[in-house]
Length: 209
Image (cartoon, rainbow, N blue to C red):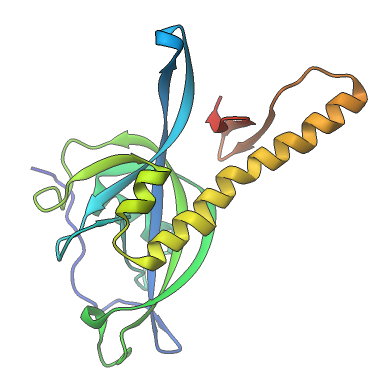
């Protein structure tokens, strides 16, 4: 049994102009995929999703942003409570508004919500976590995740937030290649560092060095 306990209730919930403020994340990792019969391999990006407790489809971890925490702390907390993963927030994906009948209350009568979503690089998968009795974790490729996404706003965060961030490196790589050709250099990738981790963009996308 997990020693961690999930927060419950809404007495510390943040609101802004009729919107309930939400914090969440898209957890991701890199997995080696064999090629040419196992002779070579490349790293592909996978995202972590969890089942919904109220119907079909899969979700990214998210929940209410409370008064005694920053939005980043709330996103990290939700990743631990709902999906049982720890890691580093490496990119802010944006704000995504949505409406939920189950979240209607006196401060948000229409159930209006605004979610701040982050990309979370997973460093640890916990064996026990607060909601493990009702949550199942699934690692998916980005196309698989798009197909399985329960909520349109989460799909938008994946496609317009995470995927654009991921694929943006391909354009970075192309521009770098052009510069390298001009300089007669042989580099085939572009790299950068986020939160102490080194990442490289190649023709296959985003990889961790």
